[in-house]
Amino acid sequence: MKNAGVNTSLDFRVLFESAPGLYLILRPDAPSFTILGASDAYLRATKTERNVISGRPLFEVFPDNPDEKDATGTSNLRKSLESVLKNKARHTMAIQKYDIPRPAAEGGGFEERHWSPFNSPVLNAAGEVEFIIHAVEDVTEVALFKKHSIEEIQAARAELREKSEFIQDNQERINSILSILLRYTVMDFSEQVPMSGMADELDAIAVGLNTVGEELETHMKQLKESEERLSFSNAGLESVNKELEAFTYSVSHDLRAPLRAINGYAGIIEEEYVKLFDEEGRRLFSVIQYNAKKMGNLIDNLLDFSRLGRKELQKMNVDMRELVEGALLEIRKSTSHHARIVIGELGKAQTDYGLMNHVMVNLISNAIKYSSKAPEPCVEINCTKKENELIYSVKDNGVGFDMQYSNKLFGVFQRLHSEQDFEGTGVGLAIVHRVISKHGGRVWAESEPGKGATFYFSLPLSITNN
Image (cartoon, rainbow, N blue to C red):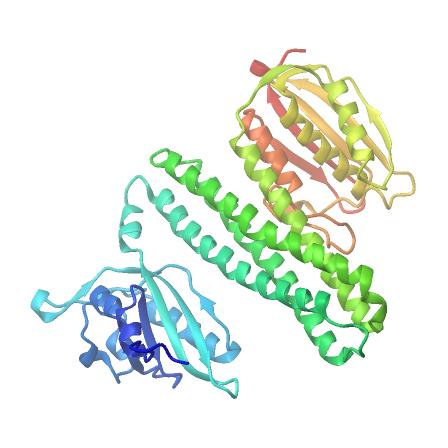
């Protein structure tokens, strides 16, 4: 029953036009993409009037700046809109320089503008694109700052905003997966369960988890690139570091909690009901569990990567052989692979014991893993003194890799071998690079396919003591 005196009717056009975001509603009539509506904020940002732009083709209203011979604003936007029509899915664009026509009252011509846009389809009941929502954020101020000393700082902030949206989007996706799992935990399985419908939903869950994991990898690669660029700029670095920490907290809080719930409900289903599934249902359920575990490992490793970057060095005089032997004990608890370990004279170093332990655990466990298919796996750990530094090496007789791809080794999620052949998240070597860089050293590798690999890192003699 309606509440007396309450007007439940809403004028959605007024709500849309008053929204604080910058939005256009477009008709999917390529190549025109006719403008059907605009928010007030969009009109203000583009210095246009609703009655002037409504009903006109998008690129007639917003052409490229004729003074910019290499302008790509219209072509890039058109490609994005065509992608939405083709795939019936949201398409996020890179930041675009797309100047706007200046009103005659302001002298005409074009005004430099930079935008961070995305385009989303609105589907009708038949699953066809009925409208396209073109949304942008005006990042002109940020782009203009790029011409000055804090270029990379502002770019990093823009990227972090995108990653915050990514977290929110995927939290909704994970929550939807969670709701399906919850329904199955309370379902009365004493009745016959229609496996055809269940298989579809289980398949959707598996695909959803895998997609979240892949997108998380993509966005964290971008985060690593932002961080590397920030290392060359000092102005504003402290505030951006705080934003990085906030993003890490979002990953931890917003993704780990629902993922833990997914694992919990999946465990209940496995214990109580999986015996009622047919073969295809059990296969799909195992895929769900695998992808949930994989995503959990990704998040945990990323948090380790972030924490290590913020940790201050606490140097002490460390017996490196003793450290390596402790790392081997740790590795043996978590891997089923075995290899003959040969430890040379390693000496002592002034280093952070905890961080250096991360380095050795990652390098040695990688060497053991990638030599596991050799007839007699062997890992050699050595140290040599050269000029003004000590050089440590971890050598294996495993599968090796092609040196033309060596530039990818130390980036987040960069892998040179398929996960089917060797499991892993692709974060370990990024951690090694980060720790050694904090020590003022270098990291590199040498290898040939099928002939093993040797990973090196150096420590300046100024912080070492043999």
